[in-house]
Image (cartoon, rainbow, N blue to C red; front, top):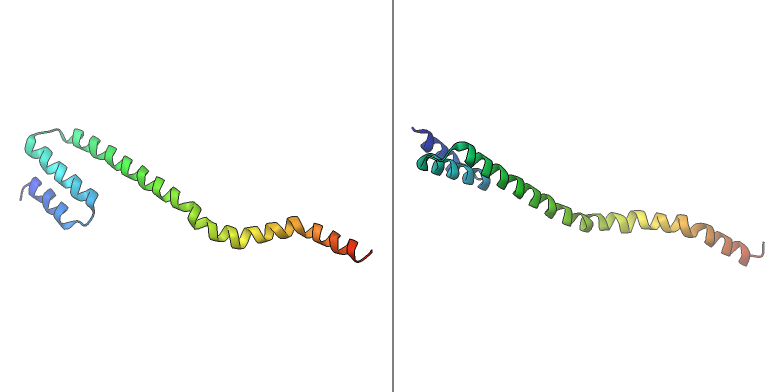
Length: 97
């Protein structure tokens, strides 16, 4: 079993698209005689780009996820703290004290 066959088999067994892409690139580089360092540099750049894209996608979903706790937990307490003294003074002035 050659190294190319082993890498190809590893890519075929995997369900991870990035690993399949890496295995395919490595096999092609070995077949064409391209230095492995160049292939690894390109693959690393692609992985960094995909990772940053995933991070941006997750960051865009955060406001939606934080909306429920904000509306139902934080805002009512904030209204009580801000409006509580005003309501107390209004009731005390209406009662005539």
